[in-house]
Image 1: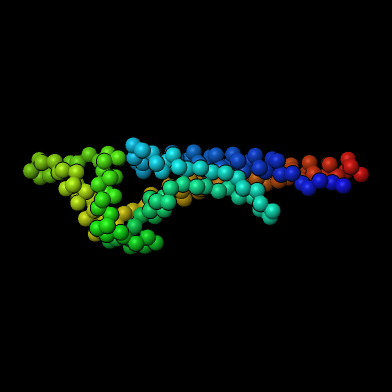
Image 2 (image 1 turned 135 degrees about the vertical axis):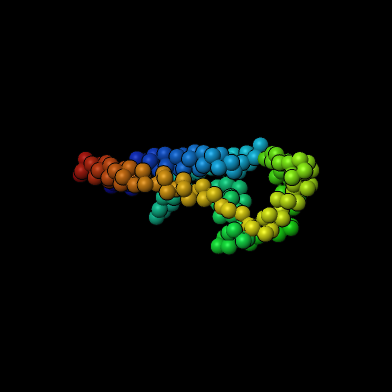
Length: 172
């Protein structure tokens, strides 16, 4: 009796897709300056191919805050973001971000540089009033990578089916 069909070529193409999405997403994050010295978000990007009973999936895991980088937070400049503005609760996190980014302050009109706390206050106030813009790096990555794989996926499925049919014919 014939064994179940093995989708070896499909799995390889999907693994290539997962790798390309991971690497292209990291490149988009770096290009758009969406990283810190810690590279926490970039280093957290992991992809894998999950083989289920009914489907194959390419999954991605990464730091939870990716969605705020992707979509931004609500405010005057971004009223359509699905994520609420954290308001002044963000201040301690902004101070930490200034330290690990690092954010270099610019002199004010008098030529004085703000302290890190003053800079944190200014950045937090801007976020409270205006929100933040998302960079849509993941969406751009998917839009750029997935179309290149549609034909490869179809061809891999075709080859896997041909191989399965050949096995059936040889067994008879």
